[in-house]
Length: 183
Length: 82
Image (cartoon, rainbow over all chains, first blue to last red; front, side, top):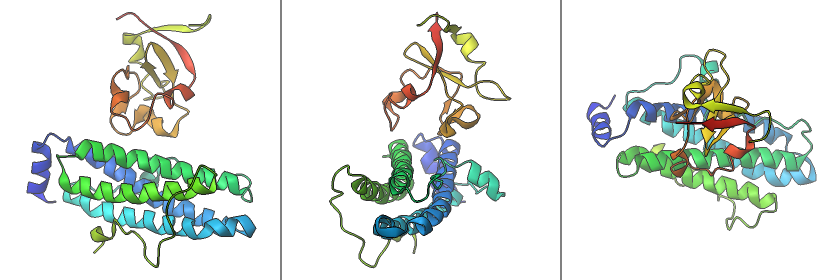
């Protein structure tokens, strides 16, 4: 644990135990999303599905990166991950991004994907709001993750016909915002 | 409030906290909502900071969502008295 780092955050008025619970729950959401997106990705097939597979894969890898980036911060602040993987799954900050009943229904698949990203956008916005000006390192990390989650949301929403994302595909890279936390 | 709806006092609301098998109700702007069907209200807790059995007045100002999220839940009664 980084004792002084935690003390600084506490002295700034943040309830560190609550913040840690939020970080663990969001780390759980990232890892479970990585798992569920793996299933969604393999089912994104056919003329419609193949067009979405690439962005689903990028979002999947970036969500795993978010998990990897969150873990060190949890331990720095004196927290830890649950010992049991099932407990970890069950404390997720977001509902499971389960495969729709009809896995050939690409619209339903997109709705699952966009709902997962929207839950994440809300979650990191919440953490940014709680830590802004108080816990600079958690804020910086949450903001980096938020930047990527917003992009994921807009990619999937574009395919749902909600308007252009304004983005182009990643070019041979993942996590342009979070990568500085993965070194 | 329509006929058949419960009138729930704040003291009574506190018992509907979603723990130990109790129903999970929350109050907002005078209405009482039943939330246990939501994954995000498991065990009567929402995003670490909010608990069932309470009046969430004022909480939505800081929440990353609007009251439309609350209004998806069934209304089971009206909050009465103070």
